[in-house]
Amino acid sequence: MRDVTVDSAGTARLYIGLGKRDGVWPKDIAEVVKKLTGLPDRSIDAIEVLERFSFVSVPFDAAEKAIAEARKNRGAPFMRIAAPKGGPAKPGGFSRKQGERAPYPKRGPKPFSDGPRRKPGLIK
Image (tube, rainbow, N blue to C red; front, top):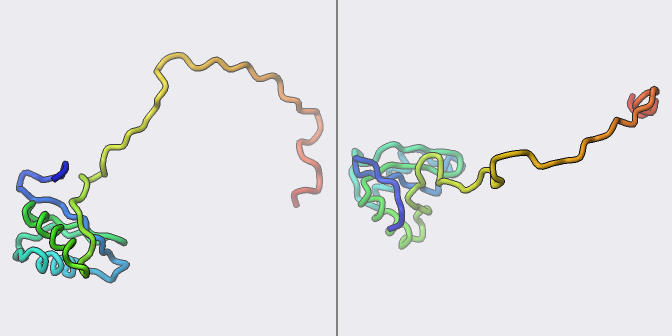
């Protein structure tokens, strides 16, 4: 399997494509995981139900089994191993080298007259 997050206790965090919008509660997520893996309640931990998706921590072997079973079962929600908290590292930042600023020509004086800056009557 690809680079996954497994903590020191041997658990993995599963992303599940069901959330509050689907009327799902933590007990519903636990039931789905139990049906797919056969795990006892005490092995299912840290259930977070968010607006559009949920997270649950399960033993790593059970996470792989849940994903495989969800792919076979048409009625099961989408599942995958979740990215580490904060998401994957993203490239970015500044691409120019540090140092002097680029030379820009000086701006000249502003062409203001002594009169008002706006035409009267446009803003009421």
